[in-house]
Image (tube, rainbow, N blue to C red):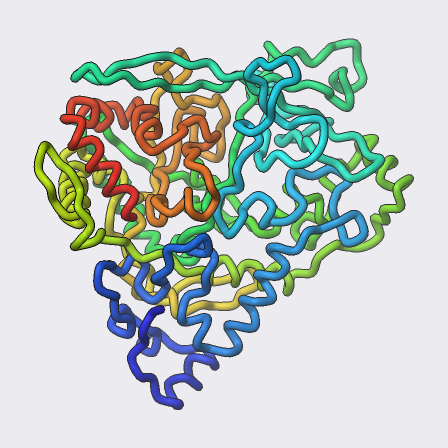
Length: 503
């Protein structure tokens, strides 16, 4: 548990009232436990359990008003929606927590469905829940009018889902320079069971070969508040400095227009959002109407009539702004697991020698820097003085003036299109981001994903089955670092993975 420095009653009252810059808590108010390092300043938590992502920061837990909002937001985040309180008619998830179990990444159906004929067939399945978003466009980039940007593969009883996803995995064998083999898996997607088999009710069929389809599995909700509190000028300065021609690296910002103004994108796989998309999540993922998105996601489609026949009413919004802001507060108030330095007594083997686990983690950190991973996965950033602002205007000064360690520059980088003929290019643009460009994934908390969510699927669509495969999928601007990793001795590669597991 985090130990807080003593705080006077007067200071606590100021915090409850909404403190100014010089009254916000700092890292000096938190003492790191032995064997740990602070990862997120005032929001660092010391948990290694399945609730490592789903624990409130101490600036929440120690202030009753904050704890009350956090608890209410947590309840709204996790409680399953149903057709009686706004779910559907079509949807992708039945609650925020259904896709983000324990504020993490729910295991996607891409790897859990079993084909009837024994073949490696995965996807939406005939019913149930898939924990993934399916994006589709024409090859010219145009959206389908009767489907939008997302195929909603789930629906309430009596309503037809928009379509289903099939995924078949192709694998290819590779070798490290030292001869050790490894395998990578590439997904091939097919959309089936279109509710409207012809585009715009014409005789023109929707053919799989005319489509670009890409899948997103849930992001971990680690460090959301700190991300929203980031100093934007620091990120833009990183973009200006992110030019390492000797390694082929040149990151850039994504700028998007949201709420009527051009803003720096930070959130999402391609930094395509300027906020945490709470309103969009309720609307697009669950079909829950709100003030920002008052229309049903299947507006104008046959599912509207099917929903009416199942008793759905469309005469009011399904959730209010205050409730959504409490969900936003919950996300901002989540703690970030402290970095675990490793045991000083647990033995570990390295190149024929017996070391301590902590010594092995330290070697792995050195390998991380030798592979130049830090040029994109920047270890240290800072938050702006005023902290973050929620969707309805509430300010969170406790997130201000923090030194944080997300291991990301939050910039776009070309991740390559060559590997297995496709690389990480999904041909799906988001704001300024092209199909082969992705925001650098923050690494904090990544080593606890298996404990929190019982799987180690990484990258945007879960194709990497472990951290090593995630590294080996790097191409484009990540090619040089990947090759430096590949050329390392096996013990050094394993030490680097051990370091990542400590974050």
